[in-house]
Every structure is written in structure tokens, then in C-alpha cells.
Length: 135
Image (tube, rainbow, N blue to C red; front, side, top):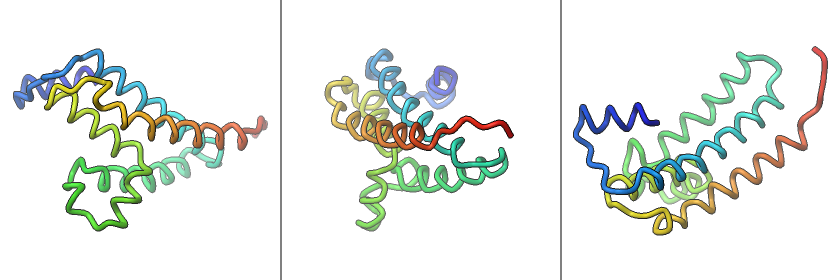
């Protein structure tokens, strides 16, 4: 994340108006939610190839519906509702708030709760699905 942020500032002159500490803390919530998803997928997939296919099945809608590439308000209402369940949607809002508007983590805190809920649900599912096996 530091490398991407540094390149954004150096190459594209992206202003960083907020606190880097807040940005890293917001990133920690997103990373935890994404890692929980990786654990869940690892309990489902039988091979590395299968896990890569599952990740692409989740990753593509995550990027397309998060508001990162296309304006969130311009999407159909059904897509907006679906996007609210994806972690990248909330992370994009937090990053834009912190970097571009100079918001604090407290001001973008309403976006942390969906990430924590996603983490809790997905991690619980991963724990319930986990079985030791010798293949």
C-alpha cells in the first residue's frame, strides 16, 4: 500500500490531505476482511486452480461494483444494494474520504462496521468449514 500511495503522489500528484495513520488503520480492516475471504475459499477449493477461479468470481464484481471504476450513484439500485455487501465498496469510500477530503477515521467510521460484519460472517463460515485432512 505504501508503494502504491507513493507512486500516486509522485507520478499523479494525488494530494494526501488526511492522516496516514488513519489510512493504514482503515486498510487493516479491509485486509482483515479480504484475508477472511481467502481463508473461506481455501476451505472450499480442492486445488490452487479452483481457488483462483473462485477469487476471480468474487474479485471482478468487487472491482466493478465498488465505485472504484464506475460512479456508484450511476449504477442500478439492485447493483448498489449488492455492492453494499462487498468489502471494497466501503474501503474505497474510506480511502477517498481520508486521502481526498482529509477526513479522520472517526468521520469515515460508518464504513468500518460493514467490513467488521463481513469479516465476522466470512471468518465464522471459514472456521465452521475447516477440516484437517491429509491429501
